[in-house]
Image (cartoon, rainbow, N blue to C red; front, side, top):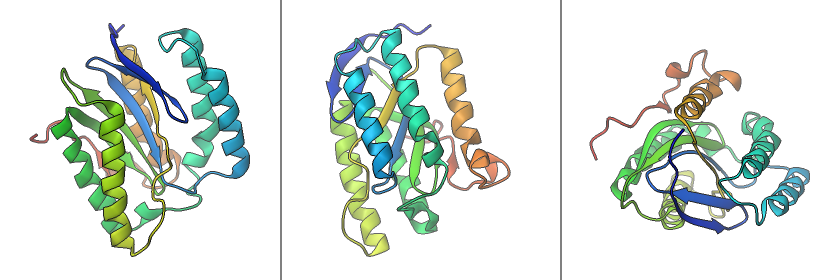
Length: 204
């Protein structure tokens, strides 16, 4: 088991638990990809998570319920799907590399048609989660909207993050990311997907 030292716990539409030198699973969705019925269900789940201690098993259970609720929509390719455009997919992979400059290293990733799955490692002295992702989402939204010659919301307002509590959980997260394109019926193997891979060995 990892020794998790809390740096901060904060809430937007979702609760976010930030720890020292953590390993996180992130899902970042594009805007307008979930039906209204699911958005209402997610609000109900969020209200149940409110006030629960983030290091508790109860918090972990509610996170699992949240993720299962949206999982089938993650793979359906519904709604706004900008990453079907190769130029957008290539641009977002380049932007993931930039995160290492703020102390957030993307060690595994997959770019799906309307969302991203990431395994991210933080380091001592890394910039705050809310600051890093707010700025990153704003910068990438502007750039990608330019590529698509469109205006309006690009990303869903919030992102889902889960802290890994053990090496075995990290391994499960990696398997999920690697197998996600196959599960969604995209390439036959995840390595065939040009927008999936490992950035850990890239120069910072």
